[in-house]
Image (tube, rainbow, N blue to C red; front, side, top):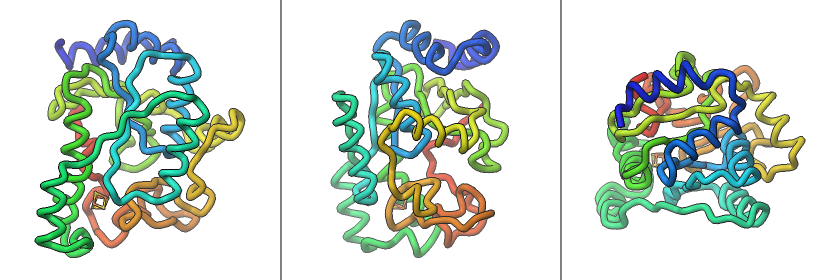
Length: 237
Ligand code: SF4
């Protein structure tokens, strides 16, 4: 599959379709090769509902870094209970985690940007590559208004590193619309959202934000100028 051609074609041809119609279209065009990664935030819960509620044939997966909040595991459980469908879990490679934590300790990510990126690479990027391997379309819950880094994102992008076309069906949604969808349909959500956590990742690396702070300010808050990304979403548009 020509990734660039496919992304450009979908960006120009699918503009009139709703998000659900786009997901159905992708599942039909790429049978068995569409995957959605959820971390159970508001945005991911919207897409999960669209997929599960409409029985769309898209694989649902989550990355368990081993450092998630208990609240995240709770929304994982309540989501599976609500829809009565499975979410495939991917763990990081045990030998690499054991070696890193033995050598550098359990909080190495606070000590340098290099250490933090190493931890994100082992706990997130490696399992993501495994999850995406062999697939053609990767659905994400990214929104353009989440951060400056994402402001110029397109709905369909090429991720050359993972050899896949990435689809961001909520690209143009704002936070209010996202929350309204979740609340109106009574979808389970992470209760940390009610405590000022907007972007929720690993427990030691996420804090609540204050009114007026940037959406991503609560992620790796001790870093300056790192771009506040973990390596999962570094793509060529
Ligand atoms: Fe490690 Fe923190 Fe990255 Fe999670 S967010 S993988 S704990 S550095």
